[in-house]
Length: 560
Image: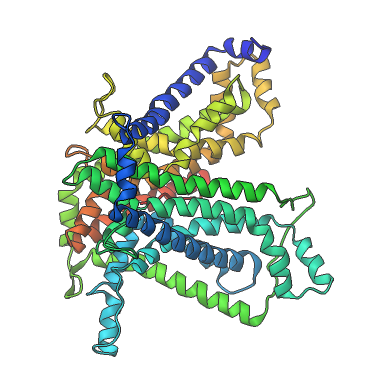
């Protein structure tokens, strides 16, 4: 055994932590993934995959997934880059306001944005009613279409693209652009030949993340694409997998097959991007100061960007506003008089769901942040043989869509393995929450740990402090901001999650997100708005508290 391994064995706390990490990864990451794969080939046969590709309906489902996800990814990246370029590279008015409003959709699940679009652009939507007044019998918006799904998903996920592009633009050495202009390059030449090429790594990361989220989204296609999308009368892979497993057929094997097929395009995109980026160099950070002050841009560009950002910002504000107004409206589209009936109904009928969601999101967010922070510390400070493999395996939940993880949990812990029966319990939801958000906790803490001088912990050890004492009293206080960021990320995503938990909920363990979706499907828009308002307020309160305690800002969301 090497010296490093011997030192690890002398620290029982670290040994227990490593064993616990490996157990968690084996039971709650590898086992669900393997269970889902085995379910798709139950009986050691590939007939389900043969049936999938032989079926015109399933092929159309795949085509719809690729086309809708591809277009939504393109539009999300475009909108994200426009916002990022506007707030980091120009001197347009209201830049700070734009950088705040663009993050609002992260508080909302995708199906809730789809619901808001129904209130705005549905048959009785406000905008369609306004168009009827202005031009009776004229053109109306049809939100129940593939373009409605694309619009809903673009609004939901383009903020993630904004964050990636904003970080990349802020990291570019501005002297590269200054040099191009000093050599005679105009604004458009510098943008085309210098700035945009340096965005390739961010564009690849954005494309991979967005495509995965768009492809695995359930809410928007289920609510807005039920009558068919681009191809035939078919929907997309994620909602179809849920229909196959939870619908009348209850075909878990075919549902697992659809989930496996769903992962393949994301893996292919990842490999293609890695191959492309490895053939090029994008090093721009040299260690010299790279402070950048927004510079004047051509007047036409400036005001075009301002108009586009303002229009999108107003639309985001309208999405939140109609949900809030709908909670206190008698009958949407017919009677707009004030009532608190929907709120009282929501608080009464869904009290258990609200309590369950807050409890599981709070405890799950805390556990994911704590486990992620502890794991990152072990990887960084107590490296052991095989630590890189364990670290890589811990990132699997980040790479897999939520629907895939949820289905894997449902299959793995439904009684197929004696002693691991958790179906219908709150524990299975809690564990799914924790495992899926664990990678963010690890990466968030790992970045912060790299900034902490190891000599601080070594000084505590020299004074007789054990590793657990050093971690709790020295390291953990320095990781407060990263811990709170991980907790907020987990809480928000757990409160709004539906793609994974829809396989795991039970009559005893109902959740707020599922109640909201069921109310929307039942066209009980007033109750759905009231429940949505409760969800939004809960996340806002937690975000506000975390910002005061840990200086946390909004970070990310998952598909819903």
